[in-house]
Amino acid sequence: MAEVVLRNLTKRWGDFVGVDNQSLEIRDREFLVLLGPSGCGKTTTMRMIAGLEEPTGGEIWIGDRQVNDDLPKDRDVAMVFQNYGLYPHMTVYDNIAYPLKVRGTPRSEIRHRVEAAATKVELAQFLDRKPRALSGGQRQRVALARAIVRTPKVFLMDEPLSNLDAKLRVTMRAELKHLSRELMITTIYVTHDQIEAMTLADRVAVMKSGIIQQLGTPDEIYNNPANLFVAGFIGSPPMNLITGSIRDGMFVTSGGIRLVPVDSADRQEVVLGVRPDDVRVSEEGQGDIDVRIYAFENTGEATLLTVQWGHQRVIARGDRHLRKDQDDCVSISLMADHLHLFDPQSGVRIAS
Image 1 (tube, rainbow, N blue to C red):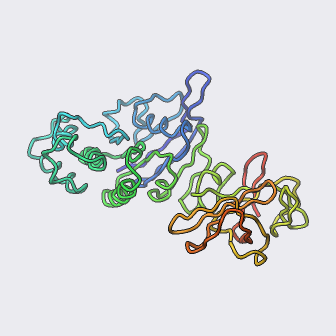
Image 2 (tube, rainbow, N blue to C red; image 1 turned 180 degrees about the vertical axis):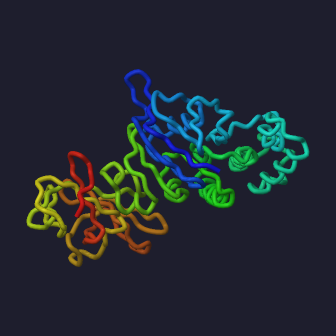
Image 3 (cartoon, rainbow, N blue to C red; image 1 turned 135 degrees about the vertical axis):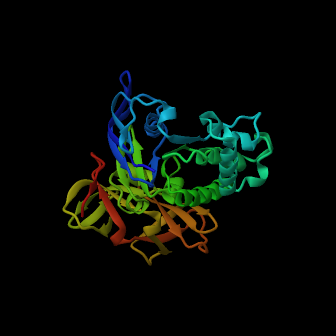
């Protein structure tokens, strides 16, 4: 087991900066998720840790050893990709055993370790099958078993669930969560799916344009976003971001509506953030402001109402039994204890 430390890590291709002078400490046995949109630098960061990409600058430490000049095979990391990377002509047993055979591990030990790894991912009865005879979830579990069997210092997982259907992703998330706790191996996981990040991670590093925007637990990232990017990226649906100003202790929308009291000095320009869960929906005339429904969505476990007044649109999460039609009028109230203020120029959150 080992911690992973990145110091001033940078990757450039000519004038393009993929990772921009980033430092990060991943604790021993921690499950850390690198989260962000395509092109933000998360996969590049992982590839540099694995030794598949050479840094332009900075240091990579695994345990007590700097590994910048080490070959991938000498870094004692195991990587799981989204495309499984299985050998189609080999059985499940041989796919899992392959890294041990390359190392020259004795045959008796190979069998013991392969069977143990296959049992952990519930594949013991499929060891004689070829990958083509397996489902997508089973193939991904073979890839996981092949990583587990090496007992590496670090797991590196690059969007391993992205090729699976929605239902299977939920199942595999639970399996990954269970495995990470059971094996207690330092894990770095790359994804653009914030649901995966929030459900799997001990900590999340949210990235944009090669820079870590915020590092924290899922609760910290969700409840106290550091800036507008994190606020808009995390959450499903994402946080409502409403432009306006602050006058005499009240937030006033850009349309001139005095919406809610806020704990801040007057400001000409400000963005107010509120989660859909923190927007209460009531019958017309019973809340802070009456609005018209722009769209109504029934998701089964809840209802989502997109409401509009002036140029502003806000999403509210209502009770699953609520039934409304487009263009109906309702009343909404914002929960004052769950509001966030951001500077529209810098994007940084304003402390209350």
